Image (cartoon, rainbow, N blue to C red):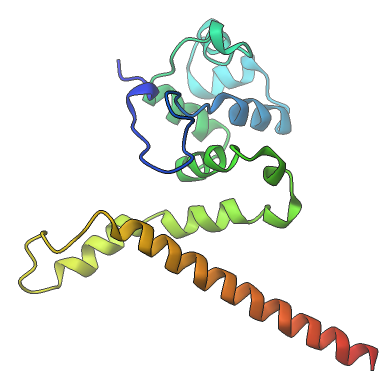
Length: 172
């Protein structure tokens, strides 16, 4: 049986060093938001109620490890995309920002950004003649992160400037 503990998330902030990311709070919050209990979750996922109770136990010390198929089934039953779940849990490391409404659409935007990105990159790189794979560097990841952040901050700054200019014109 594969366990979520065996999934390596090599991303800064994905988990506290020495600890796996905890998806249970995300799942429990989604269940509460959808007014879904263990019984209904069991019917939607075909996971026994007793097993769900142990997987979703509020006390982490009393939880059983969740298998990848169980995790996927639970997310599907809650209409949560896997990428959305990963990003939400990574962002939850700073809980005060998670409740900040200014960032409510950020998780959805990031999920859209990353969903399908590997496939699109592979398609684009496949068309390059003479590429043998040695050209790609792991350290580019941080450079691309910085470029995306710079682009996003620049775009939002321009929106804020236009908004401020528009509001100033309205007050004149």
